[in-house]
Amino acid sequence: MLEKTSNPAFTSEAFNNASYGYAVSNTMTLKGTINKSLTLLALIFTAAILTWKMTFSGNALVTPLMIGGLIVGTIFSFITIFKPEKAKFTSIIYAISEGLVLGAISAFYELATAESESGSLLGNGIVFNAVMLTIGVFFVMFYLYKNRIIQPTQKFMLGIIAATGAIAIVYLVDIVMGFFGSSVGFLHSNGIVGIGISLIIVAVAALNFILDFKNVEDSISRGAPEYMEWYCAFGMMTTLVWLYLEMLRLLAKFSSRD
Figure 1 (cartoon, rainbow, N blue to C red):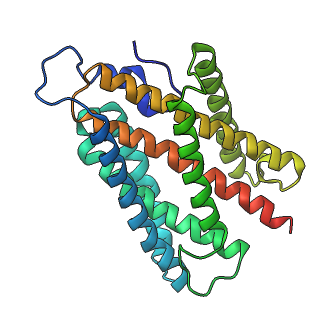
Figure 2: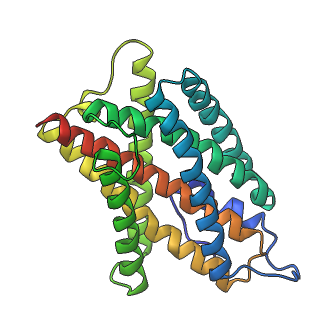
């Protein structure tokens, strides 16, 4: 039975739609999943560079691209979730769209927290630090999972699911309040409470990787069809993107205290 997870890409319904139990000529492998994940990551990074450069050059098209990317990415993320067999195509569109959004958001954070003349992703600003921390956390989580230092027990998974759901509700409330000129104060505060909340959210996002690794491992052992490599890669990217955005938010709070 597929383990529960807070990542919508790894719901039991989605995996049941993969038609396990039927004969398939090619099945999902770890190597294939890693390759697909790297492909999607490269697409996100490439698209992000485009809107990053456009933002620093003052190109007026960056806002339409960001908004368009957000809309298209959201649409294709849902298509991917409900139609896993289409993931080979939909996950690619999602990755490109998400990259356009991340590039612009990253540039806005960089401009808001530090002066940058080159607009290079290899600089020493907040974006570089967020990228490095995100990569570091990913490998730490993989190490902890691989060596079974953190065990994805039923109680552990239910706890992460509950925490992730609570965070999603708070963010939804914050978005709704934003329409009325207000917000959930502690989400944006750079005080001790605000930073503490951000640290908790970063921790929850990171722990979602444990659930993701477990689901990928279980899917491979169950002989999932090959197209699920793309689907699982998509699922991993959603967690990675979330963690990166939370890292940006956290570092921005620290920066604003200086």
